[in-house]
Image 1: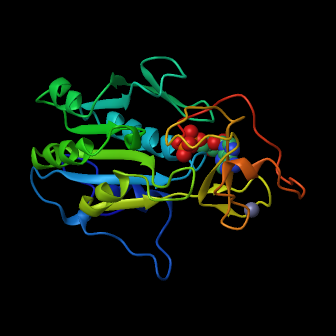
Image 2: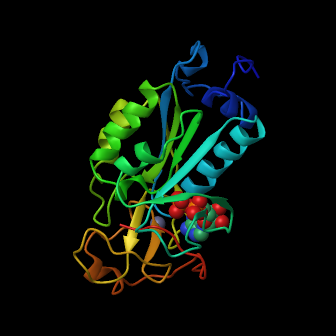
Length: 238
Ligand code: ADP
Ligand code: ZN
């Protein structure tokens, strides 16, 4: 582990503890951040890819390092305990509900060093300006969200957030049909609404081969399902 002696842990430090980079694995330059400078880390991927788990992991490590952390999630994602981010595997961390991105700035405490935001795709364009302001104020901003919608299209505002971020992590789930890496969130109900909040009966992870962008077709598809559907817990959806 290197470069971890500063007042805040850096994304690079976390990565270094997990796995040494292999050939072709690039690191960003946030390991040389000096002084009281902020930055933006974004964690993206489909549903079930572990975005909330990864967000919670980073925030817990910051808390262990005795940094002042504030965590926010959009009020739309209220399927679990009201003031908590919970992953599909049951991992949780207390959070503050916000109905719009600007509320994050209103609720921000001056001494906060790390700001976590889950399900950022539900917070609209404004979240990009809010994250930029937070980073400019010297905060470490960790944001998680879906990068594509139920049709596989880029899910605004995540692409804009990726453009202004210092560090990006793209996670994949496991395709429930064939076991390959899953980049898509398959909607299983026939709706053209961009946001349909739902559970595992409504969404599943699929690879690019098994993904069906037209939800009306999704349930009619033939072929064996080799992965068991995991029922019970659920999370944000698009
Ligand atoms: P996200 O925030 O990306 O929706 P979570 O962090 O809430 O993901 O949940 C990740 C967890 O979901 C995994 O650790 C695993 O226990 C569970 N899970 C359920 N279905 C799948 C799947 N198809 N692929 C990978 N993990 C899955
Ligand atoms: Zn597949």
